[in-house]
Image 1 (cartoon, one colour):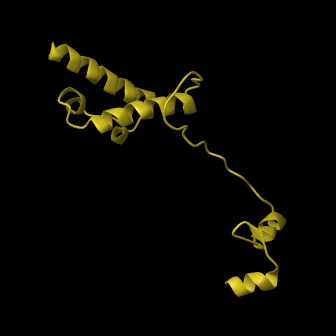
Image 2: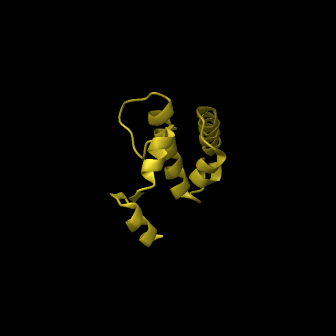
Length: 101
């Protein structure tokens, strides 16, 4: 019956929230059972896969993209100053840089 199926959908949605998905990444029950917004259903499945492979340690088959990981870097003053001479990925002299500004 559709009541039982809707209950499974609600359990899936609760599981998605517990898993760490944001509300905007999760379909509504009607999206699936009334075929109102199937693209959101598919997007939710992709989001579950992305979450599993990115932060939950799952290494098996997956779909979608891997979520970005935080990658903070700290540079000393000399490195920061050296970066001032790179424009568009190309090393430039101070005179060339002045012309580009």
